[in-house]
Image (cartoon, rainbow, N blue to C red; front, side, top):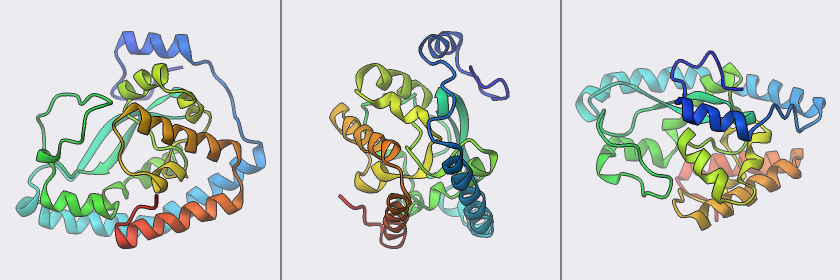
Length: 225
């Protein structure tokens, strides 16, 4: 059940919990939807690749002055069928330090660099997620993957939260464009309902709506409500 190729593996306790609570559920969507989404994901990732490389090159130049430390930040997240994978982003926070944040803790604002705030506002920090899409761990559109430990805790406490594990997580999604960052259980529950709606009622029109809203966020920093 646990991805054997993952370099950073969950602890034995977490691995045992995953094995006990999630079975290989196969595929929720029919084959034609999965094939069409994969073709779309690969096409979008290849189109975005020059942008990812270009932005990365610029950050390599400016980071030593504005955000000293590594270019990339990686973290274990939970994906389809509750499989852990390594998500990659452009780093926006002070490098190193900081204890593991709880699922109901606020963002560590004091650790976010001024440059990082700009990257986060326009979702530029998430561009390396396209490498996760190319690897098959993520989709362009889908539920946002949470940290492994957070996902396990929220699975116990939030109704329908486990529904997200039916499909691949996404760079953007219905919950992402309708709500900003949430830390409360009630906020997570709202996003879980939106993820469930997306999964149950997937259609081309909904996908186009989410993509349009995503571009609105990228271009203006505005998040729809």
